[in-house]
Image 1 (cartoon, rainbow, N blue to C red):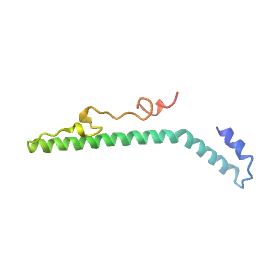
Image 2: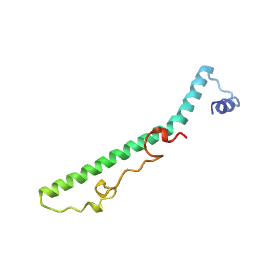
Image 3: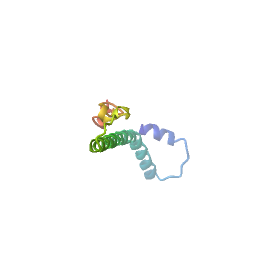
Length: 102
């Protein structure tokens, strides 16, 4: 990939120091390699937080219902852990960033 970036760069007359161009090429390569991992990890963390919030809301609703002697049907709550829902991993098995590397 780095060679491809260098080859394209030769076709343009850029007034940039060679050291600066090397840093820019390195940053682009790192962005390509680790950018998708960052997105995957961010989505997984957000999904986990959403599942926790849903579980907390469901638990509060049950506690209030129990306190007031009311029966609450949580089957209408979408993606509720009370219904056995789990957060599906975005990529691979959800075990980590190495799921993407094959």
